[in-house]
Image 1: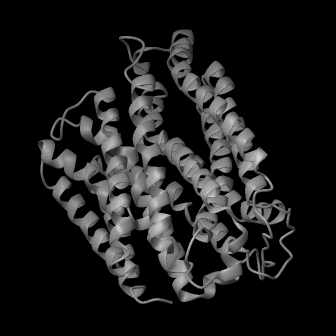
Image 2: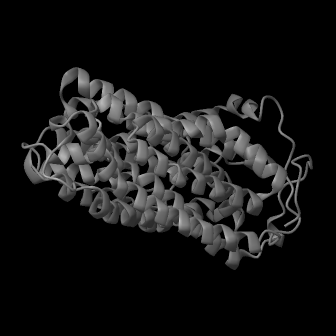
Length: 424
């Protein structure tokens, strides 16, 4: 691929892309950043216990991770436009590796703030990779099937989000000792935290090694794209796109969707451990996170077919209302019904991100990179909504009441689906 400066006015030339090779490459990227993001759901209960955190403090994990989308989203889009999609992917993967390696000093010093920094750096790389992946998969085929194609690619994202938490729970949760952090102090507490966090370090070192291999392979294909060009941004880093009602409403819905999805995923372990729900131990509850993300995986494969036959906007409105219904069922019941109703929301989430993304970005043409960058900024909702959910949980002492905030997010998304049910 020729290196671009982002100054050429012409649209990206999709006809020169070797689709089979790049489709495999993009599917791999979706798998990687999906899996890494879902590991936060395993880390949160672990760090909450180790550092005796409130729900609000524990949600700083998601806040720091998803704040990277606000800080890096637009600069990441500019970087990709300057150096091209493939080299941009390598830059993102290298940044992710750096974030993984920062878990070493975080564990050795048993410092919560360093864990948060490591997560921010890791997420910064994820953002750059995602800026590459979303528009690239949109180019690999006919415009008429873009909703279905991106949903299919997101299914591989869900494979990662299903696999990573299960094995992460085995590796990270469960504890190395028969004590808890609130029973220790001083040197003993520091030693306990260092020992317990070593499992987190080992997991992320393995991820860093895998990322190094992937980055090396991608570098070999750095010139695989021919004739790639991007239009110069107008306004403040393309923010003028928010003046388009369809795009602006869609960006808001990405903010709310990611916030709702992450809030629920972050609370699953604590929610299922409650006596009136399923009363599970920490590791057993952690393993069930895979059902939440696995529902999204199954739903995306199904959704990629359904979206070829039914208006994407109507499908989006329908699943958003389904998510609200499941939250209501979960919070108003007990036992297995309550627990599995919450986990089933993953199925409703399945087609939301790719469908909102493509509905919002219809007709952007050569502004696709700008649109993708702004959408990635909107993913900052994954920082704000979970933190507010944690505040509600601490203030009310009820996880059920805290789930009303994600339900409100889904209500707004249902409205966008109905609004965007017709083509732009």
